[in-house]
Length: 284
Image (cartoon, rainbow, N blue to C red; front, side, top):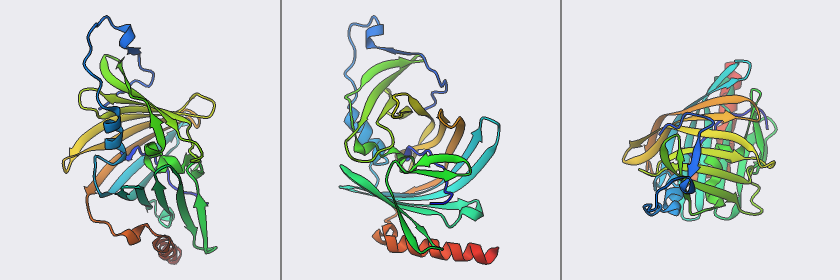
């Protein structure tokens, strides 16, 4: 697949409460002198709230991403994300809004519980449907991102711990460990998530690579209610492997639009990319 766009969406889901220090001081319950602690929040409920975008049926979002490399080079991209949830998983259709030369790029992804995700793009010039799995790296102007990251990390494809209470820079957080289920072609064997105990909003995530070390850090800088749903609106991402920094902002989001199923089909993907490619070529 040719150049695509970069997104680091935990939405994502999302996309998907600042915790600014990239190397925070963390202590557990055992580090405190408290003898009595309140019961831990329900970890399963917090995770479900995150992976279902606070229980919505579907949403349409416009997002702005900017990247900065170690040498100061900057890039930016805007995308539209359409996502629909069901009892068995989620369907996603993602397109590039800008830059214009990338406007014929799109991805269709079908996520099913406990099954490998099926993702597709389409090469209009070759009239070829490209099938991708979650661990597939895609490129955008020197940066690489996996399909899994584009889909908001697919946290539903992980088993997770019941959580533990930790203190990070004076804040009480709930730490949850996610372990990838077998044979799902996921890019990250494990993920460590931190949620604010006060309101259960996500605070930060650490993506662990095959070598057991942190590959990327996602810091949730802003969460606010939109249409009465907890929405991640700003995320800072530190890519340890590529030495990149990324900022992702949700510029617009609308919930429960009643998106038709036909959007999330191979036929729609092919038609969209074919038309967008023709428009781009005629403009050149």
